[in-house]
Amino acid sequence: MNNVKALNKWANAHTYLPIDLLRMALGVFLFMKGVYFFSNSQYLVDMLSPIESLDRFGSVEMFAIHYIAPAHLIGGILIFCGLLTRWAIISQLPILISAIIINFMGQMHHQNLLVALLCLIISLFFLLYGSGKNSADYFFKMQV
Image (tube, rainbow, N blue to C red):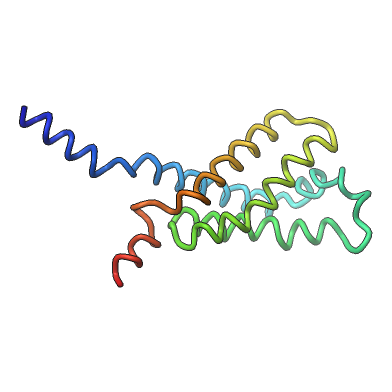
């Protein structure tokens, strides 16, 4: 009986761990995507080619390299640490929604669409849920 109570206490104290691990995994994934987009900027430009016909004011390539890759890099680090998580996710939402739309405008890539949808759903969850118990936001909130 004591073992069951001890296990129940442990489970109640650690229920946030899987959610925090999911947040950290999302942060690592977005950071790695940012690194990949910086190292392979031509791939990013090729992905954005279906919307190039809508580009009337500037270069899609410049937008991609100067917004998408740094937003993934910085946002991934912030989401991983749990620091300003909601703000970092808000900066990711236009990119993720655009990734879904681009799949429907150009040639359909099922794997990219699935990854973008999954990231969008997880991001929307953390936008509503917050950063979790094992995060810098929670730590700083408890310091006050």
